[in-house]
Image 1 (cartoon, one colour):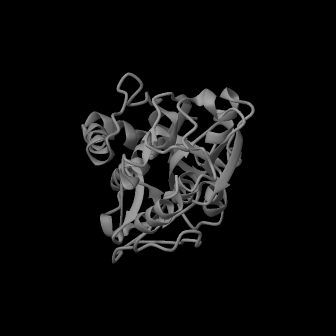
Image 2 (spheres, one colour):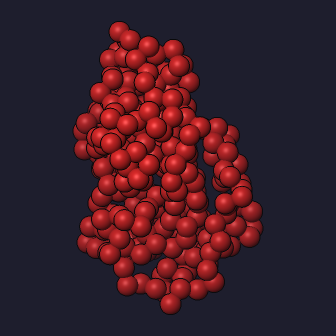
Image 3 (cartoon, one colour):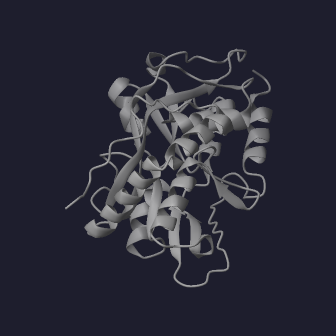
Length: 282
């Protein structure tokens, strides 16, 4: 389709307007006027609906979880600092004290698994695929099996590619720094799909428009979202787990889940959610 390069460039510009140019390293923090101790929280800025930086503020389901946990831990809004931390930098940023905790998706085979402990999870979802719209003549993927011998784009550090290879061993995986870069790669015909947890894909489709992007109903694997802390802090993990249980009990978790549906159109599967949390971790 002759307009793919134009569409990809336009989407990249739209998605990151006010943040940084596509391909540019991004480091964003949004501190309030702190009065007292500060809790620094690592978040993504490229996941519409889950963790999204736009117009000078963070929003999304993961951000709401982080804010709730911080409040239960005793921090006021002005004491919370959000910092962009890519998936593959979580362990380093926690270890060097840049952030106190991180929120986002994680997998059992993450490279930071030995250095990061996770509280939660606070959300369990399926992995999925974002593809070009039905009216794109170059579209070649209508199901997971169609990726045999083709290319899927993932964000660097994500375990979505590993989960996809477990389903389609011959798929090639292309890594990019941000999901917006993956969408541009998809629309330019450099890749055939974007692999990610489904809520993120719905957010990307919402940003790009249904005329150009589709989320396939053929999901695969499981993606878990949790709160990560530097390994070796069992009491801190237990406190966060307690905060997550409270979020479920008082209805705040369900409110955040409903907000995910209204913001990007993703309906949380309540058969699997909210995830059951252990009463304590030793």
